[in-house]
Length: 370
Image 1 (tube, rainbow, N blue to C red):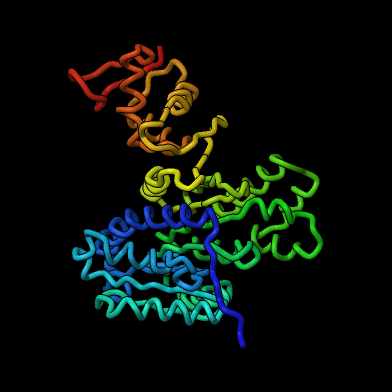
Image 2 (image 1 turned 135 degrees about the vertical axis):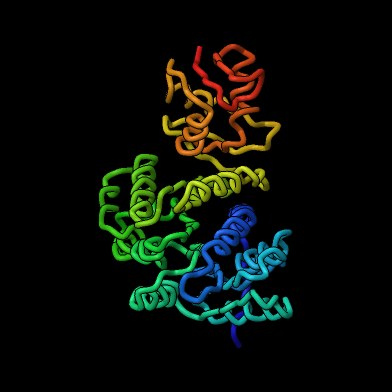
C-alpha cells in the first residue's frame, strides 16, 4: 500500500505566499488594463498568462491554500475583475509529482465552473522541459509570448535553470518572482555532485568563484551573481531581492525580475504590505549598504531613506521627481513613504531647505540639505 501523502508548510511559506498574493493584487489590474490597450496584435484578444512552475498539491495538510489557489483567488476575488470581462486569463500550473498533480486537479475541480474568460491548464512534468518547449514553440513561430507572470519556487534549487528564465524574460512584459533558498545554495557550493545543478541555476560556472569564500562573503557573492544573471534578460530593467528572516535561521530570498518601473513599484508595495508574522520578517539594503527591516507603519523609521537622499544629492538642489527616482531605484523604500514620512519631518526640523512655487506641498519645489 502506498504511503500517505503529507505536505507540511515550512515557517517561511506563509510569508512567501502573502507576498505573492499582494503582488498579484496590484499586478492583475495594471496588466489587464495594458492588455486591453494593446489588444493582442495576432488574435485581437487581450490575454494574460500566469504560470506556477512548481505548483505543488494546491492545498497543504493544515488546509492552507498553495500557490495555485492563491493565484486564482487573487484574480477571482479582485474587486476590479468584472472590468476585465474582455481579457482572457490563462493559468498554467506545472508539477512533477503525479500525486500532487492529482490532488491539485481535485482542488481546482472543487472550485466549480470558472468564468468564461478564465482557463486553467495543469501539466504533469518538469518545469524546465514543459515550459521550455512552450517558449521554444513561440520563438520558432516568430511570435511573442503574451504578458506573463511566472512564479518560480522549486523544491530545492536544481530544477529551474537561469537559461530558461533568460528566454522567458527575453519577451516584453514578462515578470518573474523567484524564491531562492540561499542558505542551501551556500551550503552546497563546492560539494561534489552539485556542479551541474549550480551551473544550471546560475546559467554560468562563475559560482565557482564562491568556493574559496565563506560566511557572509560567500552568500553575498552568490546573491550578486544570481541578480546579475537575472538582469541579463533582454527585457529585465530591474532586479530586486528581499531577504526573509525566519525562525528556522535559514536565509531565503524573494527575487523579482521586472521589466518596467511600475513593476518595481508594485513589488515594493507588496513587500511593505506584508506585516511580519510568526517570527518572519523581511529585510533589504540601500545602495550604501544600510539594512532596512520591513515593519508595520507604527514601527517604521525612514532614517535610512533620508540618509540615502543626503548621500545622493549632498548640498545640491533636487526636485521631488529626483527624490522619487532615488527612493525607487536606490532604496527598498516605497515612493509613498517619501513625502509625509521622510521629507516633511526633515523640512519641519530644518534638516532640509525648501523653495516652493506655492504655499505648501512639494509639487514644483526644490530641496537641499542644510
